[in-house]
Length: 135
Image (cartoon, rainbow, N blue to C red; front, top):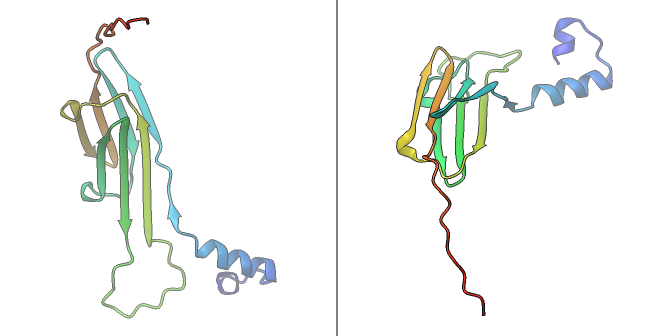
């Protein structure tokens, strides 16, 4: 396969490596920074090659979930014969734990391959005190 095309050794181990490696789905891990300041948290995530429409940010009960998915396997109109094709499907999903994030206090901006999410910190409240009757 690829080794034969490139003139490399073609033993059984290399053929199996080619078959296994070339057929793996593309799963990525986004590099992420999280910064805390007095009023909010800021998550910055590198998502090169994605566009805004391929990214979703969701607030859930105990956190935030960021997902990006690119599908390059759309039917092509020309009759290309690929010798190698690595740009097929890429997906990233990261989740971060936060206590009951308020969706109205979350803002997201995607610019130059960087997704920046700003999450307002909830106001610190005095814990509610409820006296429990002892029997």
